[in-house]
Amino acid sequence: MSENQLKNQASASVGDETSESAGAVLDGDLVRDATIAEFPQLVELSKQVPVVLDMWAPWCAPCRQLGPVLEQLVQEYAGKIALAKVNVDEQAELAQAFRVQSVPAVFLLLDGHPAPLFTGALPASTVRAAFDKVLELAASQGVAGRLRVHEAPAESLAPRETPEPELPEALREAAKLVTAGEFAPAVKAYEEYVRENPEEETAVAPLLARARLGARVESDGTAAGVAAVERGNAAPTTDVPAQLAAADAELNAGNAVEALSRLLAVVRMTTGADREAARARMVEFFAILGDDPIVPAMRSRLATLLY
Image 1: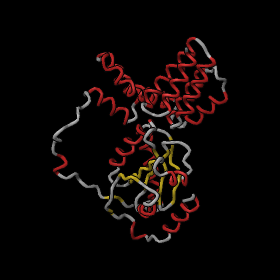
Image 2: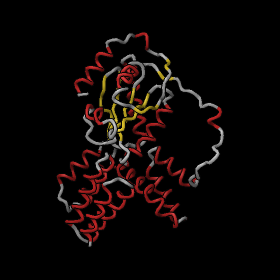
Image 3: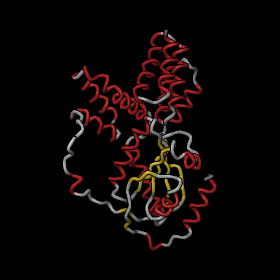
Image 4: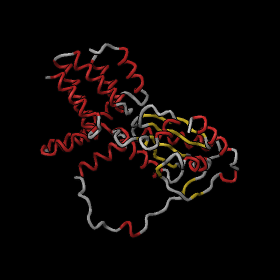
């Protein structure tokens, strides 16, 4: 399906809607997986309830950070916003129709019309502000319906026969801080936990690295991502602070290859403390990316430069 076909389909569906649906209470899932085949149903839904489209990929660490934030906030908005999750690896045609350049990429489908909302793993406070704007826009267009929120059946609340081991309370609290976009306190919580439990440093490293990335990006403001990359591109490779900030912005936007390649260039062109700063940032990124297929190749290239 081309972009024009997508827009034509949305526009055609809008023309069939009547004002009688305003304020309607509908049955349906607050969070659902979306496919190209189901897109017409999303168009219909968007004429009564705003639909947020989360373009994500299983290998994308920022996607895994943003996804729970979106799902939690959709629950908080009690059916006034629906969330459709699009796995771009499985739904390449739909991603192409929306011209997705990197993930996570979040779009709005409102009254049948698609529009970009934001990119990158933003903190919960910023996403909440975006959702508030969505509801204001929806109200101005007469889209005032909501999905009925169903309580979980009693049997689903029963204890599981084989419960998974729970995280220690300190790690659960730190994870809540990350989800809420409070990255700096989360960093302190993770660091304190590692000091008290040094044997778990390796296991906690990915969580701490994600929190540190969020804290650094947050300190520059929510609109600093593109500006940081532009500053990094304009600065010499040996301007390490500019390159580190640009790499953070790129990874936070899901552009892991660009971020790691930038840091490799810094390692290649610098020595001493500057080289170590770039190396350490790459190690943090490796922890965040986990089993991303680009990690082994980038580790090998880093080792070649260092040794």
